[in-house]
Image (cartoon, rainbow, N blue to C red):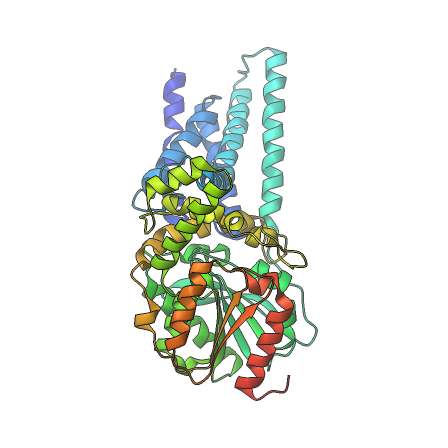
Length: 482
């Protein structure tokens, strides 16, 4: 007779093998409904097999644990907050829940449910229940609840992204393949023959599809608006390279721009970049000016090192002024940037809305920023969960490596009309640097526009004035009446 412990060990190789495959195939977890459903289905089947082979309820523990260990071993070569050891901070909790937590829900939960049912089927087939009726029904009830949760999760991730149609226009979610990687795009416009506007989101791994849809829909009357998810963002989840580089980001942007030129038969496209997206945006315009009809930089980066050092000093002063002595002491002891990882930058990032707060009355977007804009059909359930880990992984991988950039020395001339936009309440250190760079910049046309009542996300906070500016950009660069 085979001992129970031996039967349990016989069930371990299957989840180990599946864990190794999953860790290689989707190291940061499934990024879209197709891979997510495959993960659920295979995990459920592996769990059923493990439970049936073992005929033991211990398979409910053994199978998920074996799978989890195998996944971690398969992706041990990777680096980033979503795959490194957990970090005890606000960002750390978020990335644990939306990274490993989501991955676990799509794999460990079906493994557990499958193992429970597999063991039950096997035990009943040989007439071995072995528990009293109360415990038996309690166990079945608990597994039934977990199975119902799994069914709800499956239905939730199966709902695909969609975008509302535009009669006579264009409205689609698509991808651009470059260097073997798929980059996601949302393309919308009332008139397919209109000038093309490529929108680049802020941080590495960033997405602004929800923000553009909620606040800048009026742009669709004047442009074909193509909003790009940078590598690692929800619609470009699988495109995140093991070691992101700035040159790779610029190459991605150029590939997207060239795709749009071919797709819509345009000689040039307009480029709108926000915040950290202005780094690859500006360099793409400098290197390939023939691709672009205009450049619009919102919250333009000039020098990350100097801007962050200034912001650090202002944040410490705000903390002391408002009675946050612990925060001020902690940041003072840490010293000013640059830092090596996102955890060190976390106090700057999380306290920026409060340290540089302003009256947002009448603004389209509030202090919540991008998180306020998740409720659009273009983001299905899984992509909503991936928004923050994409940003956190992207920031951690690339931002510390950009500290040597200083556009006052590296970009003194652009060969396309250039429009720079800031909110009236932008972080002061960033505005000072922008003024210095703008004073020396040479371009066929240049203009610096300050939007009243807005901050760093001025294009989403005050979309009315921003859309008016963009219609003027079109008129001045395309010769089209406003």
